[in-house]
Image 1 (tube, helix red, strand yellow):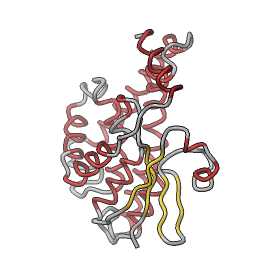
Image 2 (cartoon, one colour):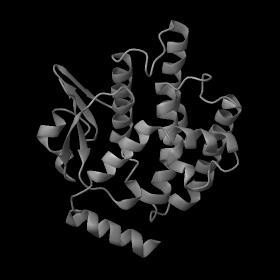
Image 3 (cartoon, one colour):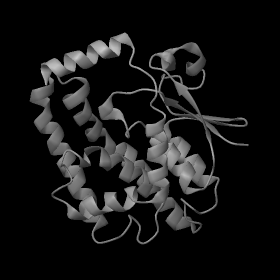
Amino acid sequence: MRPTITAFDWVPDFARGQVRDLRVRWALDEVGQPYDVVYLSQGEQKQAPHRGRQPFGQVPTYEEGDVLLFESGAIVHHIANTHGDTLLPAEPAARARAVEWMFAALNTVEPPIMDHAIATLFERGEPWSAPRLPSVLDRIDERIGELSRRLGDRTWLDGDVFTAGDLLMVAVIRIVAGDGLLDGHPNLVAYVERGTARPAFVRALADQMAGFTGSPPPEFAAWLAKQGEQA
């Protein structure tokens, strides 16, 4: 049975290539699992049918037989855990370390990066955003520096084998790669380049981008216009 995931049919340009269904698509492509996509228009994710799948009204979700999951990290873990050792090593200790890095990507590295997105994009015009930004940047710099030192000259986080931990970590830190926040750490720049050069990532990104065929609802058009005025 082919799994089915949910994704948006439209997001603002700055979010394209970053919506979290990309992480699930990437994992499915890495393990060679075809999948179907149900596309949601903006606002549809907050309505009752989708809330039955995702109580917080977000994407992605994953459905396969009697398995219905939300949260991209949980979905990636399920995919990795049910498709041999492609994304999780067979050796128990190495497998545990890969899972450890999955949690580190989502729980330790991503929160300050999302704070940056809130301050510079979603709440850019609010009076608290500019004063808050220096401390957000400091926290990102601290986490990125720690990650850089731990990666060192390794190809991947645990050596020579790409795992689900790398998949999620690359997905997280590439969010700020375009802002120059990795530039002081050439090993992380190269790490992201290795991850995003993988054929599975290239396919996943192309598939996500091809799915953006909808139009912004009126409230998003107004919000985008306001952001332009404040830029």
